[in-house]
Length: 103
Image (cartoon, rainbow, N blue to C red):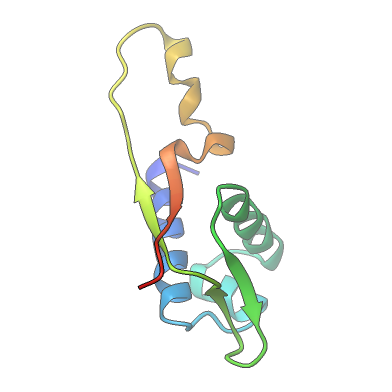
């Protein structure tokens, strides 16, 4: 999968989670056009980045358990081909979540 497609999928996940419109895992995966196992892997990766994602049985949706923001940074790197290894999927290509102070 291309990096840009993956980023778009993560943005779509973020949007559905913020709107509490994911549904259960199977429905969420269907909205993203991926398998349930791929969805669970993506959610795990986002949690590892600090995204406070949980499933809420009351709303029947994945939710953020505290305020957070989604950030994406892409830096231009010049040099040899090995300098681009930080764009691999395991690093999430600069994706991060920041916790926001409660107001």
